[in-house]
Amino acid sequence: MTAPFPAVALRDVVALTKPRLASMVLFTTAGGAWLAGASLTWPVTLWALLGTTLAVLGAHALNCYLERDTDALMHRTRNRPLPAGRVDPRLALALGVGLSAASMPVLALGTNPLTAALGLLALVSYVLVYTPMKTRSAWALGVGALPGALPPLMGWTAVTNRVQAPGLVLFAIMFLWQLPHFIAIALTLKADYDRAAMKTVPQVMGDRHARAQSALYTLLLVPVTLLLVPLHVAGTAYAVVASVLGAAFLGWGLLGLRRDPGPRWARREFLLSLVYLTGLFGALSLRA
Image (cartoon, rainbow, N blue to C red; front, side):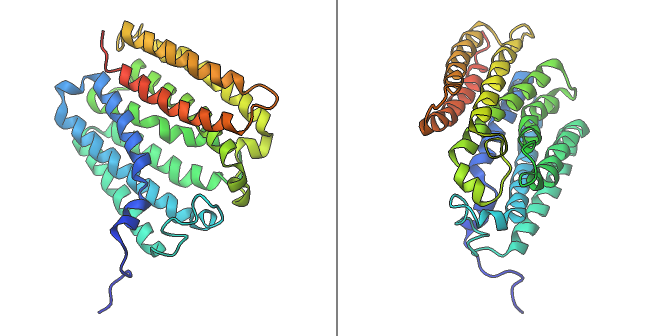
């Protein structure tokens, strides 16, 4: 009897799930749960993190399966397991479906149906809407930001079983943060995305318009982050850190409005966005 799939290295199977991206999702999910009072409900929080992990890993595997042909066209992704031919596409499909299917009962039974419904929305919007939309419309940027913004709200609802203002603010922070973050990626990898016919904002609207959008989204993001203070889930220390980080992030974004900021601007915008998000959620642990 032959095996259903050819032998494959474990590292290639793991690579299908994009673990580094998944770790960021878990970071923001845990942040939402922490602010909602996770210290009082650790079992529920752990179930939330497990269910979210399964959903994210499954979504990434399905994304790799659906994008294997376009991945083969880009220098950045052509050595991934599927376009490089190291993994059978059927294995990626089975892995993605299996992990995704397992995530829903874990979230529903381990936390609550509301969190499971949000997880299903994130999964479906990422795999069935955002992924195919990337080669059709620049509006994929906003659509893709939806599933990326839901994890902190899921962390909040896992603990509270309610959609409340602080959870919605966390959702808004992640939604707005992703827009300049991914515009920076699109600017940096523009040639690669051209090869795959991806419809990013720079491809469709031009680099200058993309940088203007990035600055606008950052301008909206900074005051939204401060809403957590009057909602009494963050204190003075967070307000100071959020203000300083926000000023730096916005200042760099505004520098992109120059006629020709050079290729280094987008790369530094990308790195600054990561520092900004890490610092922001780190500051949220400061309750004072």
